[in-house]
Image 1 (cartoon, chains in turn yellow, brown):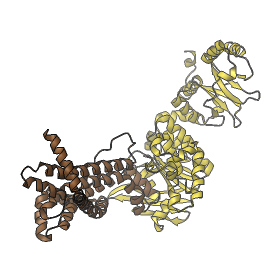
Image 2: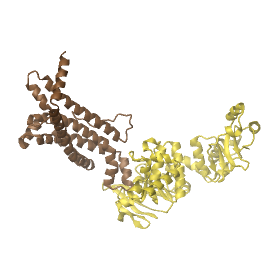
Image 3: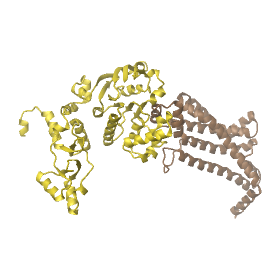
Image 4: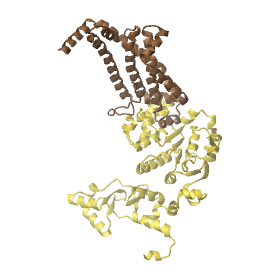
Length: 379
Length: 229
């Protein structure tokens, strides 16, 4: 649906920022443009909505050449998210969200409905609609930045390093959110990044650019498995190529059997089970196996002295992963968030397994020394 | 003792000449406002223009700076040769002096808008005029008002000199005081309202300025982008 042919941008007669790039993007794909600074990735992105005019080559959206379209109307039909967020500080969140609909002269009711629909989509309360951008945190502002790009029902969303200015945990949450949104809405997302982790995590296909040229354009798996040349190999990094071996595995292969109790057990029963199995954390489930929360040995100690029930003291907010997730994605999250025990669940939230830091370590060792002689095992 | 008699003389003067004083007060104020208004009509669009087409900005601002360096009395005298005596010459002089602060603040106000925000606006499909109307002007409004405030305060001072070329201003009373023996009462009677107008305008516009600044919460003091004199 988006077809880029021989796209070139030359500055000052000789500096080729983008050099003869051709690629086709399907409806509903999540595409990453990745490269070092000066690789032309942002220039290539900005030519799609004609924020930069190409020197030569063509860009067609659904068969229509963008150069033949009115640039203002073109930009209104393409969502745009920037690293600096760029919310208008003098407008409320609601006015910011429906800025493009306002330019398109939608009715008040329609704008109102859209704003409420979108803010719910990114898990922010509707009361935020009347606030001003500086009353929100950076992560919240960028959520608004993302839904602002969706407000006029654009089919293509361009994002220029959208999460670059956020702290790692907020970035992680927003990446997940954007990925879910993209899948749910079926829109075409094209984003620029220099972070390979981000590209692998989000993109269906990755375009690797260097000095304005397209080096490789393929799925993350294919790029990791068959890097086109030494540049790509360096760019991915040796570490990731090692991590890549367990990448083919899913969480299911790596998980161990979790220790769990049902929620109707008393605390003393829980303690004896934990003691018997020699664990410091135990998961709590319903009778049908649905995961409810977890208990730490310290909580139990405290709760036992105060005579509380199991359901009162367990933690309900836990990070869990799906059984069919790729192991590599999970490893990264686990390491980043510094988690010790991660429950594995299926679609219905039934507890199936457990990943711990120690069995992650085993996997990493396996992948590095997988073929070493048995002598290592004895050590 | 001296102060006491001065105050009673002053109040006697004010009550005897109340009508005359009010007339001068409004003449003075109106000449200032007219001058600044004309300067705003020319200066604000010109400021927007030079902010957009950067090449012009150096020339235009230098020109306005040169005007500013001419002493007000000399300017009045030169213009008087061409325009004659009276209020119009004073208003035109005020116009010339008000131009720089208005022009410069409009220019720097628009220039100081975060380019990421205007870029985002453009990328969302705003036309150039929409970027100006919906982003640049609202975000620089407080700085532009700051320019008007400085211009008005300067104008009050310039108008005061206008008495020398026959315009009715509050300094008529001051001049009478300097010519008379023991004219302290007259001098103070004229100077007080002039100072009062300047201070009131300054305070009122500062409050408006702060209210309009979208980037500053009510607790922080706004920074002056430029000040003259």
